[in-house]
Length: 512
Image 1 (spheres, rainbow, N blue to C red):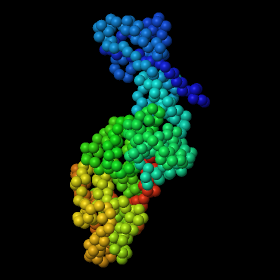
Image 2: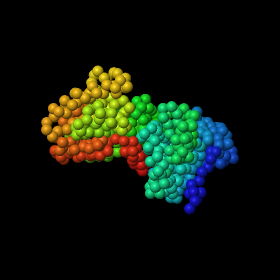
Image 3: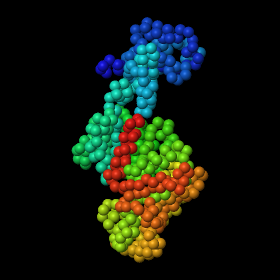
Image 4: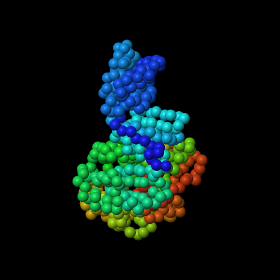
């Protein structure tokens, strides 16, 4: 069966709309419309009561639209005078798409998800035939969605990737390497149509391939959220996903704009989820209104299934009483090694810096702010309204080194050694140091207690047995009592984080 057997497209049409008050129930209105148009030699394609109350729509050829409005205005002159008909006007440059499907409700739902709201819907129940009218520039995307639902052809998901550094660049390669397998197994085609950073972006409606770095390097297009959105609209791209792999405080301000323009969001950027609670809730309302999703599993625990687990427990009514753990892969590496080796604290920091575990300025890790943001994200998953300012954070950087330049800080790292050596030596026997985040208190109230601090724990405990740069999370619940649910594994690294973002993209794509 070919596309032409089921899907027909008629272009260059116009919709003549009647708007009025209580005239629809009058006998003979439809026949008067047909007669006056036929007498004028104007062919009527579809006549249908509009979704809005007290309206009728008539489909005609675009060339006849002006004449149709004129003769109908003359025919219904008395009704206009009395106010029964308030307005008769045409919407030009529309197309009719006719198709046969028993699953038209699913098709209409998919159209709405892609910000397409038919101007007219005409259904012939006995034949399973549906005619919908859309603006001409929505025709291709509408046809693609209908074909996907009717024929089960591969669903195309268009990805706009923001940030192509360590995580973003690794993600591009993972998507390209897996694209054939995903297409074969899942009937899902992932197309990377935009790759951008803060300065410039590269666009390709057909999707980037293995030469993407070269095309990004040679691109002359200035980065612009408005430009990206316009490009997607101009090329009628359906199933849009914006993927944020930056750490930008400014870029997250555009999330609402993307959602309002038909994009779902996947993000490894933690900033939005730690903004003031009013902004946090505003995006959730926008997502609900626009039927869009925002996935951010990698915000805490990189590729570990932590946020999903907490969401499921919370939604099922499970009373989570405490969440505690080592949230930073960087600080996990630092204190796992410092606790077991005889090396100085500064030596371990420099080693972590050389291995790429820390930020270029290690104070970003040692400040505890990254752990605090992650802890706040988990608190908000439990519907707590804590703000960042509510968190008690132990900054591991001495006050004398907080405001100096990065180079000076690195040159003075040894000033940390004496203090941390004392802390290490003053522990109880068989104990080790861990930098933990701890959400506790009465979590059934509006706010919980959030602490980020360096603690000493038994080496035989779950926290104490942590290795390498792994993260660990202990989730205490009413049902499980003193035995927490423990999630442990690689909590840092570009490959792990990119794989987690990729997983969010696939989950979102399969539910679109």
